[in-house]
Every structure is written in C-alpha cells, then in structure tokens.
Image (cartoon, rainbow, N blue to C red; front, top):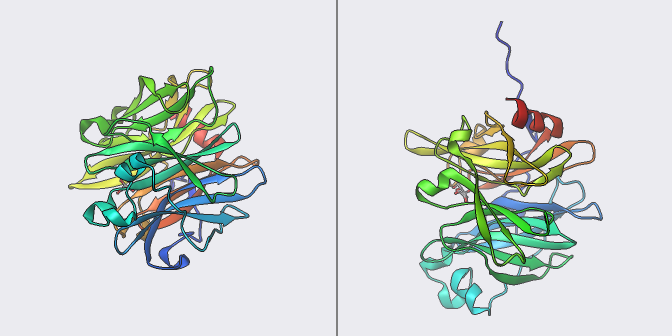
Length: 323
Ligand code: BMA
C-alpha cells in the first residue's frame, strides 16, 4: 500500500509568526525577513515591511526563543545623506517620494562575520536590481551603508559566515531573464570588490524548480559541508509557484557542489502561502541551526506574512546527498 509521504520540513503550527497587525502605524505586509541568533542566545529579525504608500522599511524585532518576535517601536532609520545610497535605495527619502519610492531596499539577509553583522539586500534603482551592503551595530539600532557591491541585474545575495582561504564568499542570482535560472558564487578580498564568478547550480539540477533557482538563507557550516536553503520557481499556467530546497557545498572549496535536493522541501501549499500580495510564494532569507540539530527555516509567505518551519539537520543533509 502506498503510504502518505512524511515531509522533512514541518511548519510551525502557530504560523504566521508575524503579520501586519503586530506592527504599529501603517504596515500592510511583513515578509522575507532576515534572522540571526546572537552570541547571547537572543534572536534578532530584520523584517521587510511595506506600508499602504508602498514605502519599504527594515524593521527590527526581538525574540528570546526564535519563535515569538516583538517588533521595536519604530523601523530602522535609514542612512540617507550618502548620495550613492540615496540614488539607489530611495526608500522614504521625502525628496523622491513619487512612484519610484517603491524601488528600494528589499529582502535583507544577515551574516555575522568575525563578530560584525552585515546586511546584504536587493537595492532597486529605476533600472534594475543590484546588491547593497550595510553594517549594523550589536544593538541593531544603527545601520551603516557600505556600498553597492554588484552591477545591475543581481539579486538574492547571501554572504558566507566566514572567510575561506582568506577571502569572503557570496552566492547570488541574476534578477531577470534567462540568467535567473542559475546560482552563482563570487569571492572578494574586502566585501566590496567581487570577482572570480563560478556557476554553482542551475534549474536543471533540481526536479522541482525549472523556471528559476536562487540562494535563500546564508550558508550554515556543518561537518559535511555548507548547508544552503535555496528557493526555486516554476511557472504553472503562467503563474510563478515557489518552493524551497537544500544544497550542500564543499567546506574548503564552496564552488564544489556535494548535492542538491531533488524534491522541494517546502512548497507553497497552505492558505497563507497561496493567498497574499503574490500567490503561491514561500521565500527564505534565514535559517538557524540549533544545538539539538534542529534547523529553523524562516520564510515569507505570499509576500504578505512571516512564517517559520523546522527541519532536522540530518534530514536536510540526507536530502542533499542521497535523493
Ligand atoms: C522574488 C523575490 C522576492 C519576492 C518573490 C515573490 O524574486 O526576490 O522579493 O518575495 O520574488 O514575489
């Protein structure tokens, strides 16, 4: 008899963990948020929030358990004043509050490298999407703009949490066209100048994402390799349907792929994933490995609410290596 398949990722039963109602003011949507577990064991989430004027905010929330998050009273002040930042990441800069105000800092991802937290994000200009980089202080109160760190048509940058052979590494994917069928990797001596691009994975490496595949959460060091939770898209009757997968990269040479899950580990399926600003979206920007081997996977659902799911590290590694 055919048994019901047991999926390796389980949604948190209290999903969504954050909705617009949790925020003061005029917030309509909260999704695709970055999360980090700090050395003191506390969790910080940097949320992508949007209001009814379609202005975007980065909004910090705090948590003791990584499940229940409390938004701070106001969003992060953005480092306006820097001409490069103001030109490429306009946000709520009053001098540019027109339709272009919607083109701004999206999809943050936090990585702590040598004690410093960095936030990489999708910086939308009028033309295309580039990667932008901030630093943030330990209290997550003050952002410092570093610079744009890619040419246009680049999105979903994730930084590795440590230098490898003396260099910083990141994963990324082109934002549009046929380019977004591929995950790339670049390296850098200083986090600003990037080069030596390497093709890491393509839609053809998965059975579940034939339209696009991209990085999701910053890589996690495990004894078997760098574990990366990735996203994938397939077109279904003209609509984009999102899923998440897992990929394992070599610890010493992360351009070597050890394996990629051949099934999606989480597919847009629940009502809160199917209905929202954009239907059928599950999109991750953060995953945290706990001491007991549980991986918390944070994901935005339908571009509308913030959710959480759990998996066992061993199951994720198995999905990468043996499927
Ligand atoms: C992707 C992203 C997200 C968004 C998703 C679904 O390309 O980069 O910002 O959640 O599309 O609309």
